[in-house]
Length: 273
Image (cartoon, rainbow, N blue to C red; front, side, top):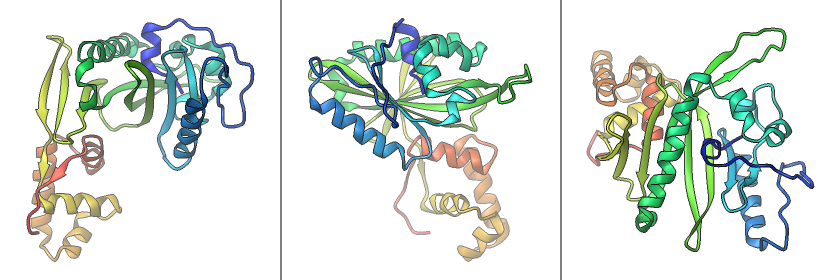
């Protein structure tokens, strides 16, 4: 995979001595201790049990530490293609209309981390959306657009920002952007306004326990009639509650509702069903 942030700040050349079957970058032992190597092995083990793409960017050495071999972002390209082409690879896979937006979001994240370095212990991760372009048929000149959501978790080594751990997954969100920073308190987040160029703190939305259970059952593939049966409620009652839930989350489908609840780690009120 790749780091959108790297597109904005680094023009780098990766001298690959060896890539093993998990696509580790072999680090110079004179420069790094054993800790990064163990860290990368843990990333590899974790990535094998998650559906999302995972990659790690080493800021200090300006290179990829780990890249999961998956075609969500790569499309018809290989991991070797991405590593060999470096930043030029972004021009092939990011939808052209979103390149400038990705550049702005990357710069904004780095500026935030630099400006608010003293509150780094409060920062959990950043999220944003953008579109990819894929040409799965080599005989066709037509590109397919794919909206994805990316999470970026910064990691420090001492006082230095060292790694970006990044994940990318499919998204039902219809517009690129949506840049947010989530705090570790799991109660608040900050949303970036691209017009006034400012961050604004928001509180996470709370769902009732009924709404949370509806989402849980919907995630199992159940329709509103089956949900009503499981909760011993009338069809119209559940239908109206789902409609109210959509309005609260500002979505138009259950798939969007599930993604919104997952992405924003929405909490629910502890009350009776």
